Image (cartoon, rainbow over all chains, first blue to last red; front, side, top):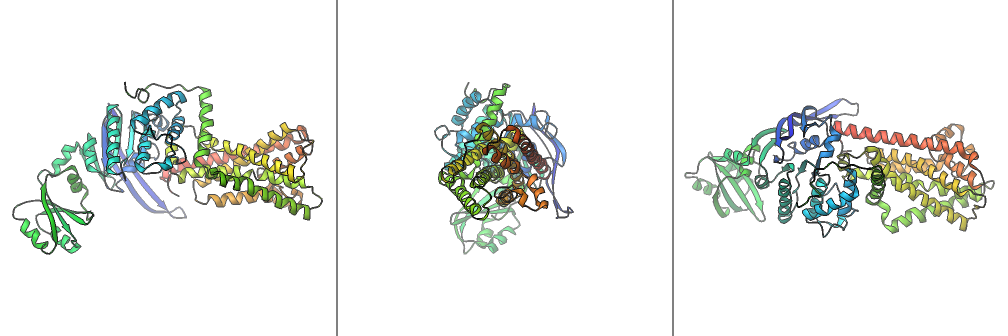
Length: 323
Length: 278
């Protein structure tokens, strides 16, 4: 059964001047289509500003589409918005969106009221949710005293309060420390065991690889690739990734390496004091000498070859950058 | 089954009693969650100490300049007007804070009735406003010689609630406007000052130029204060019935305007993507 069916969805934003005359039009979501099977975790990946959050806002009835249509469990997002709100829930990443002066438990109770859940059912449900999100011991503290990860877990708890059929999670692990993010991924996996349909947006490719059954990559509002994580990885199957860890390389040297004829793409990551240059190579024969020639007076800590990952496929799709 | 209460997929039937409970708890949670005066020291200073100075200032000023009016006139006028701290500032802040706290988008994503969400934000502030007036009257009774000997207390309480409800309507209009603009305090200050100047708090409306009296009668509080003065002076229901009926209508009118504006903003922001923008 199809839980989410998106058909040629478009969202344009119009900027008008004080006289109401159109100043600028910007297409945030440009004719996207995808389907999510019931009980599936679908990943919508893309860089900042790609249109992920706008898509979620339309699907959660918080924003009207400019064109196209979408159905959630058979209900139209425009005509049946009230019915949809009963069967979905959502979280938007970040600290905001909770009542900081209330306790975690009271936040959940308040939202239970807003979803018209009688108190006796809500209280039992909240106890279970708090256990599921590992917040049962801190539930009666005010949200303002929580860490970012704890707030995020309460957000997920809130997203479960109405026993939704479809859950939209917009960058739920954004800004969390590795332990917090891992814990949240455990909770997301649990949702699948409980047969929820989940649409997840994330920047973290390993997270998508780990959790998602199907993935769509969105760039400038358009879906540029979709399929299973392994299908996307095939896009970089015949490439090799060379990682060179260096200290204090300047932009000029990076540009010189980028111009080498065997380099398909280049990314630079800064890790503490060092930089890691990731080179996506068309060929691997006799290349080290040419690279080392450019790096002759740069301190090189390590050079290693590795297999391409989903992140590499993603970089290939959305285009690399220097940081 | 583990988590059987979270994931039971059963249709839930909600009784009328439970719906009333949703409303009352919503009022309580929103007051607790979004109201900035909840720190006791700030509450005491803002809602008790500062209003007492307003009562003292205008009573002594009135005694000096308007010898034809009794102290009761000023004490009653100011004690009732200070309830606008709750019904204007409190309500406006509670509604507008949903946006600054980032909870508005969460709220509008729920199936809850918008009227329930909107009106529940005012309830606790109406009670709070009543509490402010009670303190003002007690202060006036102990220190400024206000006399309740001929007062019908049931009628007084009824009229006070109607008056605060009516002023709350204006607070809700301002709160809704605060969802669209940042200047919520500026608007609240303006409304508070308008009530002080135009509602016959410290001078009879007859002393206002005729053209300005139109403003007085288009505002809440004006008729309520008149009715309360009549009740404290020994008036009965028939003396004030038309005044409190009109006050009630004004309150409903402002409440309706506020709610229409709130709904308009919801629909407009869905269309234009401005839910989290100013």
